[in-house]
Image (cartoon, rainbow, N blue to C red; front, side):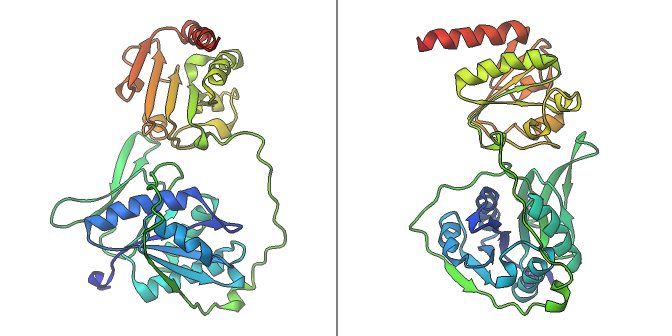
Length: 336
């Protein structure tokens, strides 16, 4: 493999039912940074049926080129046709770096594409960067050994260098409607015999019954120190006054106090709210990986040596069961 032939940063622009997913725009923001470090282009790969109108949105968010594969076989996500389409792009255009969102689709697609192209894949990366030395290596960092340390991974011998990134980890750029880019329609010769082995029989969609915490602007999050459902009721009252949502650490999910959809951290969701209140959360690295990019972090904990204070903008050392109700009452009085 001649590594010098491979260049540019490619992003799988995931769309569902003709709607771009936020993670695609977030990855374009990071791709722009990586590409600029190497004086390369950002290329979005847009697959689906009748999806070409979405190309301008990708350009506005940082793409220099958009490769559109429009085909009836790509109307709904199936592993084989999507893998064939991306593999065709890899063989034809030779990308150096490829980023995929770690969604249900991305977690299925990423490993298949990397195996098909005999290259590596770093899953759930939390940091992506180009080294500032002469080598200009692409470095992918992710939690390892249960989140007890951070591992930086290099893919020196094969291309593309692939990584999946969870939604909410990276930050999308502000859209520039005046940005210009190139739209390339890519014709893929699909192996219909392979594709015919698996058919989509029915699509079942669950209705969302709760707000997605990754979209919340304010989160009041509880850990082991909250204790029980009665403790979380105090957090819910505070969240209501702040116009936010309640989330939790893994400890409370494992204890059956909170549902998994509310979990923040390495094995939960990555969030980036304007305000994150960590109540009774010690601040293990697994939890910090999911919330440390929040704009403002306020921590309440009895232990003044708790690791959460190392990332907090404001810290309150004390009993959350006394402090949270006091904050709630003060907010109520201010609104009268």
